[in-house]
Image (cartoon, rainbow, N blue to C red; front, side, top):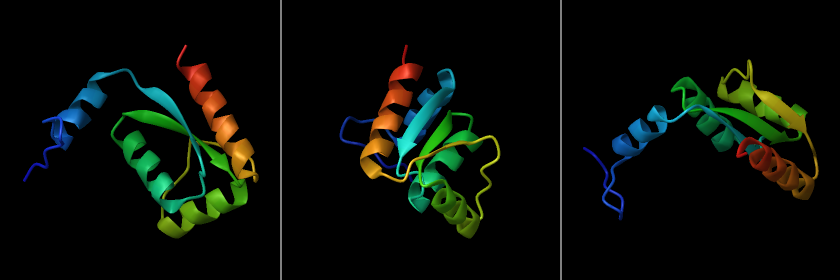
Length: 98
């Protein structure tokens, strides 16, 4: 069953559209969040994007290990302060968008 969004697109159409685009790098603050780690791993596994995880590096690695998600070839920017992590992720996004 396909879930339709309000704009009429379903998830498979959006996924295919993303795959048809060049692979981009996505910088994400709160990189230690297990949901974030899972999402970037899935996107990487489907050749949609690469990720830069910004957050407490030890916590990022610990969360990924607990979830059984390898972080090989994933960049981690060690920043414990959440405000600075958000700014670093934003700066990474701005640099990639040019």
